Amino acid sequence: MKQSMTLIPTLREVPSDAEVKSHQLLLRAGFIRQNASGVYTYMPLGRKVLQKVEAIIREEMNHAGAAELFMPALQQAELWQESGRWYSYGPELMRLRDRHDREFALGATHEEVITSLVRDEVKSYKRLPLTLYQIQTKFRDEKRPRFGLLRGREFIMKDAYSFHATQKSLDEVYERLFQAYTNIFRRCGLNFRAVIADSGAMGGKDTHEFMVLSEIGEDTIAYSDTSDYAANIEMAPVTAVYEKSGKQANELEKIHTENKKSIEEVSAFLQVEDKDCVKSLLFKVDDRHVLVLVRGDHEVNEIKLKNFFEASVVELADANTTKEVLGCSVGSLGPVGVGNVEVVADHAVKGVVNGVCGANEEDYHYQNVNPERDFKVSAYADFRFIKEGDPSPDGNGTIVFAKGIEVGHVFKLGTRYSEAMNAVFLDENGRTQPMIMGCYGIGVSRTMAAVAEQFNDENGLVWPQNISPFDVHLIAINMKDKEQAALAEELYANMKTSGLDVLLDDRQERPGVKFADSDLIGLPVRVTVGKKASEGIVEVKIRKNGEMQEIHKDQLAEALKTILQEL
Ligand code: 9G3
Image 1 (cartoon, rainbow, N blue to C red):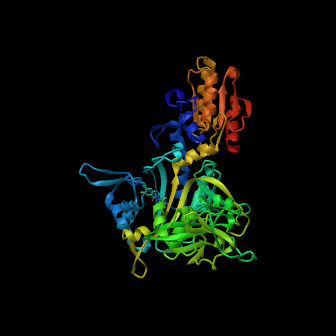
Image 2 (cartoon, rainbow, N blue to C red):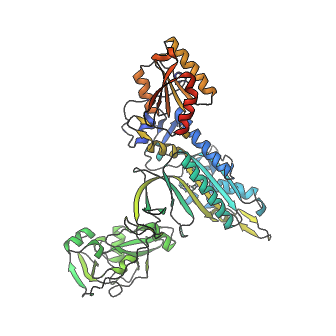
């Protein structure tokens, strides 16, 4: 491609509304332009990167035995009404009416469409397993689109769906696609971890997220410092065990704690440590309230609460409800004497001796509270977020936190959609069974941004060779100089003939502008045709490490092949 023929509008200034590196650089290097909040145009260079990422995805998905199709973004409301999600999703699901006033959703994902297709076309176990995928634009009306392509309202996803007669078959395909994902992200050059994700009701065996490590990531990963254990912090189980210290249990005492509400205020006032306090929080769990106890230095993990009760709604009760149900404000809540709501506690609470908790009376707390003697709980379970320094759940090492960007997510769905939409098959005994499903997503446009986030320096982007928009940036210092122009055109033709993807900067621009743009765009290798054109000598520069060398044009093709292989 010749730059005089394409559109690569580079910017000198950092756009003010771009907060993260990848967003700033993709804008400045002319890879994307914003149309609306969370809605982007992929400019020619951005489009090329997407095509390279998609090519890697297709190779690995096809190799894993998946068949590519392409589903509509316009989805009949009826399908989402069958699955029930028409009613459970709020404004994030974009909806519209056609000219006949019929309702549609703009596809946020495609479980409903694919399940309705397969139920119509597949009836026998002989046709299973079947794995279908697409690479398609998705629409999700995010409340706060941000970080450019990392959280958009219209984005490109590869979404795959697998259909099985048995759980064993799903497990096999899940493993194979898990491996395909590992290959895809490695070939994109990313530093990533596959982490155990929210287990839903099951025990965390049925879904993994692929996380790119980055301090601007929105997810927190809990991983072991000595093993390959890694889990989304929402999921990571706590395996620490708690024994009571041998301390003598003292007499329970009610203390006036004027205006002392938070754990910090109370523990400072009473001169005790957070870990000797019991924090009580009232939650709405489906149609009832539950008082949840955790140690003062821990936080309630609502996903674990939801999974424990297999609830569909779990939310912290608001101040008024708390007052109504327990007769006092949040800052004075405690388990002693509570009889009208169920009380559950995190395992760590069991180890508290002579602790402090709210007295369920405004501005009063108990001191020397001892679990079992002073209050009963209906269950002790793992209700807290894991913390750095906790033992790794696999028994190896201790937990460290890292931030991650989720670029992939694989699920064992089971029969959630096939039962709701009656996607059934006849098994070998002639019995009708619901198909067992898996689904597998990759954020394609998000992957491009994640690579930009991990691969850049003070001069701009530094694309890994596999997904760089071009292999070589060929720069002619002065296209008005006949020898330079002739050599540039000759090298351009030769490189393309030898299979290299070349971007020729043939613009009438000053050298400084060309070099700055070249560093910003970040192609792996730059070849400059300048003063020594008459001797057939060009300068070759490697973007990643700045290494420069002069090479005669006759050795150029060979040299470039070697350089690109070693990158
Ligand atoms: C919606 C909206 C947002 C959504 C969903 C549905 C996330 C939704 C989860 C998934 C699960 C998998 C197939 C590919 C891999 C991920 N956000 N999810 O279902 F209507 Cl507005 O998308 N889908």
